[in-house]
Image 1 (cartoon, rainbow, N blue to C red):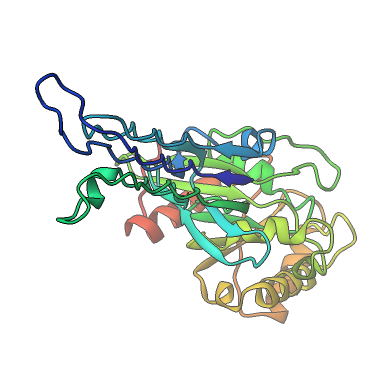
Image 2 (tube, one colour; image 1 turned 30 degrees about the vertical axis):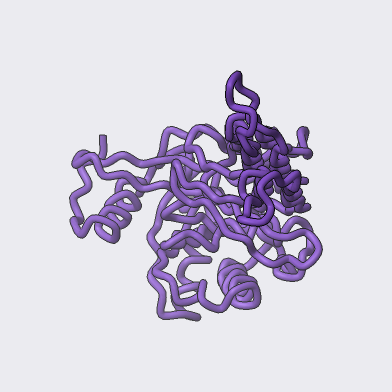
Length: 328
């Protein structure tokens, strides 16, 4: 996105002209500042596509000064509405300008130019009729890179076809596309669990990771950045090994991808889920998984709805400190 702030208005060089006042003196007003370009977060927006299709965002210029020491009209600020969790960077250097996380947060990304001074400011004892004035300064122009890092409490992490989208459907009112082929989900999707005590937990379905995602393989980096803001991770494992993968290898590889991308992710609270426990070979794979680790996964079948209440209870216990969620 190219952010172009408004230019400041020029100061005015004028003199008071009034009947019976032959030497009214200078009365040129100041120019007004140009409008800023401001990012504003909105919970009602979930995509940066509107900005993508309108890459040039220009604020209004400030008005010029007038007679009778009148200041020009200030340039109107331009508010660019973006989703919560948007990060603004300088395109060339990748320096982070700032971010807007919560609904209503604002971030000025380009400052409007200052208004110029009118000639009334240049009066001295020896210079009673100045014609000097200053021009307004140009507004800032910046080429920005906007990144969306979704704001969610929980991130679902797993290989393609592990059943994350099905689990999200079962836990929340979100309706992601579900199919039997990999990469059905092409962008992160957020759903919300609302408990009986009116507390809420937002869950993001992070599209399936693959080996080498931390190096940008596939859309790895595009997916992984959404995990950064989550406070809790759920590892969803295909315990039936339906794509010929070993669930233990899957878990270890997922841990490595997160470690290589951001080491702090490994220390976050997490829950390991053994999905597809209704399949024939799932019990064998689960026994092997337990032998090779000290983890006792939560056994579920997202498709059939088995164990979903246990997942909700675990989330409520972590975020609200009560094992009895009373989900509505």
